[in-house]
Amino acid sequence: MYKVSEDGYWQIDEEGSKLVRLVFDMYISGEYSLTELGKELKSRGYFKNLSVTNVKAEMYGLLKNPIYRGIRTSNNIYPQIIDDDTWEKCRKKREENRTRSKAKTPHLLTPLIRCSCGASYSVNLMDATYSCRVKHNAVEKGLLHSPDINVNVIESLAWYVALQELHEDMICKRNDAKETYEEEIRIYNQKIAYSRGILESTMQRRSDLDENYFVHGRFTKEKYEELTKKQNGIIKAEQDNIRKYEAAIQNMEKQIQADITFDDMLDSLNQSYDTLKNGTDMETMRRITHRYITDINIEPWKGKATSFWKKVTIRTIHDMGKKKKIEQLKEQGLDNMTFTLVGTFYVNTLHKKAYWDKDMINCVPMVYIERLTRKRKDTRINKK
Image (cartoon, rainbow, N blue to C red):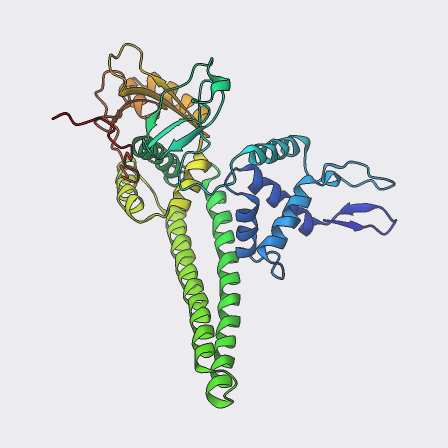
């Protein structure tokens, strides 16, 4: 990260400082825990000789080390690599991660949904709902709380919004889209190189194993089969990774070259819904959702007699850009198009429908994913 100059002062090592900035940027994005960050960095070829546990320890020390802010320690003065704003965001993210439950969650939206009392929502498996995690705590009894909402409905709506945001980045050609694609392609090429290295070394070990068993007889059949199964698993996993990364690169290269019309964008969006809702693993869905959605607010729809209606506001990283687009559309007399850019939805959790507007005219094409069902038992006594 630093090196000593000819006159004896600390100066920034350019290659090392890039890694420091990368670690900070990836961590404050909210997409990675320390363990996930360690795995991701190793998949890109960093820290090759360290285990994920040791990489995690390295990351923990790096993210807390004040020298990267340019802080003077003892008799040394280090040039600043990390600006104060990034350092503060990282500190808050570390604090947030310390207070958050360590249990690995399969749910997309924890902790994006916040209650009016300030607490985050968690999943109630018995009711298959997201609800305030302190709602039933006696200490918090005097506080007002936001309503519960069905897991399947709100996750489907949030996933739909996240896909819109993803496609806006991928297809609508923001000014920095080409640079973004090229950076992601570079990262995928790093991962391919790392996977090929693992594949090559594993295949060599597999060859050595065959020789030791069939030629020299140094293993029992049981041990040979055990080691062979393990190595074959590694080989298949890395081959699958390479195919996946190469397909992603090919797709991004097409996006860079494509001349996309609005109709093409909608067709591509619909195709992605069909593909992603059936074939995307939950961890990928969670990462995409958390990349684009910043927070979700749920409140009762005032004026509606039934509790099934909820008003859901989903804020994303593109909200400022959407406001500008809305003004442009209004200036062009296209007010009827602005509803698709607004992040407020009116949701009927009974019929599993969501609308862009209060008049319930523009229905959201829900990417519905049935994952949880209500488990609460019927405690009523059957009277004879």
